[in-house]
Image (tube, rainbow, N blue to C red; front, side):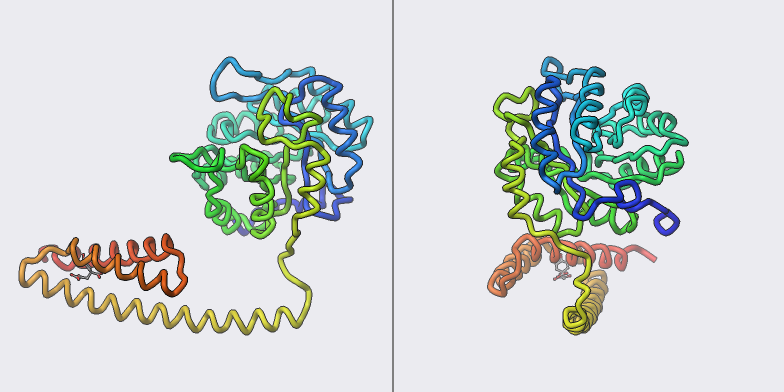
Length: 363
Ligand SMILES: O=C(O)C(=O)C[C@]1(C(=O)O)C=C[C@@H](O)C=C1
């Protein structure tokens, strides 16, 4: 799938784009005035390319504001007429999708909870089938890259080529500073599986609070993402949903001023030459690393045979604990990240035990 996947670049459906794709607007539309006041300010900033406004809001618990519903689509139409900005909203089911397409929205995106359900995604795919829609797909709430890919494939198989993935973070399974854990490795894996697919980041939902927005947005650019979805509100303190993660259009502009946009390559032969030279040094070091690992494996296997002859267990917990403590200490002195060293040696050790238990299996 990854090689034959012919997704359009963003420029195909947004020809005037000359910067990363920035989508901004309120988490929820609350009134026509709030929608328009926010949009008028955003439209003054040439870095904002699409206006967003939540109409149907999936809430974790019942009882909180669940969006204004279909009337919000009319307000989006007014925003488009008045500001010229393309407009979009989140859809959670087939009916939302039908209404959004009928209202002529330029962009729709499937929310994280809906992406997690293949049935829902298929129903949405059946609605957009044969249209020229721009469909964005947020990651599922759990960090399952195959589920994300599956949702993208369903939309693609409905004939949609204007597809963008949105990274909005994953439900945390432990205490974290983020509202939704970014788990960047899932995004790297999506990029590996679908190299042509544009991916943008939604720092608002990852952060859950304004203070973290910049750090996450910069990281997204450092990782080569094609854009951002950042929530903004004319008066975030009064927002009916997600007040803590929204910024005023003025604060959005300040945040954007500080961001450094990075490119896939520098188009500069001097940079390319130096990069090639440094990469060949890394290649040499990596092959040394692999040779060293292979020598270690030879000894581990020898120990395995010896343990088998003497009926000794493969797992030697005291030696293992001692070894780990020592490697972490040495690694820290060498300025290596402690978690990295721990995970590396956990993997090495796990494989040693696997090899030795295989050796010990009766013939
Ligand atoms: O020291 C041993 O007994 C080994 O077999 C080596 C080794 C290792 O990989 O370093 C493997 C398994 C043991 O649990 C502890 C350490």
